[in-house]
Length: 74
Length: 74
Image (cartoon, rainbow over all chains, first blue to last red; front, side):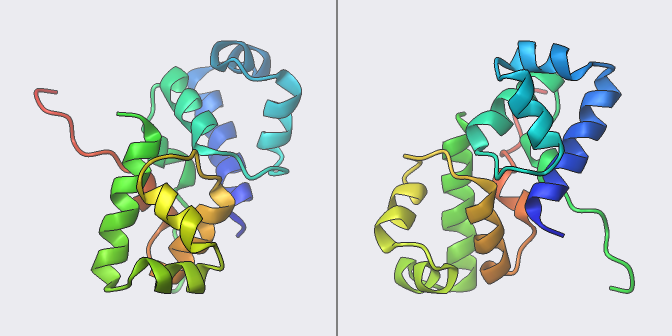
């Protein structure tokens, strides 16, 4: 799984856990709504600058965004 | 602590744990030696594209690079 997808999946999950829409999170983290939408689709390799801002607003550890689902049979 | 510093500290630690010089890691991960050096100094907000490549070569989970040292008194 490409790290873009891992990030996208975690971002959607953490945003939903906070109960925020894309609009709300984009506003809070000061990123454009369009860019956030593409990040959640796994289109971009995000930088840790943005990860830091998202983590801050969602009140989670930055590392949470890169955690991959456990692999089977390992 | 800025996330650039967290990343830089973890990168140096994980590279040393593998026993590699900056030259070796830069070669393996196909990034320039100069860029790697600046990353280890906390000068840049790295993208998850590079984190993925470094994690692959150092055989660690990508999330390891963003883990912050535990805060005291929390």
